[in-house]
Length: 237
Image (cartoon, rainbow, N blue to C red; front, side, top):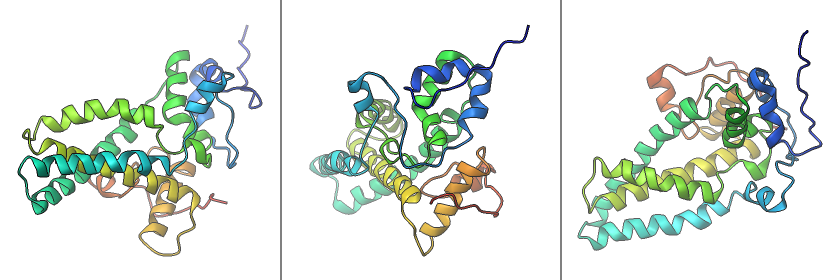
């Protein structure tokens, strides 16, 4: 007897449904629904609220932290030009972190109930509903949790006085990433490089979802051979 395939009811909270798709989940989540109205995730209003983030919350919350980090390295004896170099190093490190997370974590292949559920919360929801403006940037609570391992990662190759500056640069890279990501989905740039990056990223969503993992640049896609072909699509309307 063949088991009947599970069907997701889009009119009900989705998070605890999608896991039941099991092996069908990957196919389902990579068939995008182009609508600016996002679905409901949870029946609980508090949990639902925590999944929604305005794009401007990212710079509002994290830019003061960036400034504090940079000032800390200055107070520890570094000059402004030295701290500027730390910022550049931090942004460069972030671009690699951005690529690695997107390629190897956000696009991990899942099949079980709980791994499907976790993946949907982490990134699958964005591929299923790519124009949902309230679930495009990373929620501040989740970003704060990830700051701890990122700080410890930076500490591996920096000194006590340069760690804050490089971390601040990486955090600035994250802010640029999230704001750029929102811009690419919801703005209509007329000039390069923004116009090119928008087409590049929309290709990742609507045509070749296993390539084109860079958001703020295509650098690491060039390095690691995940650069998609030049054919483009436009599903932004």
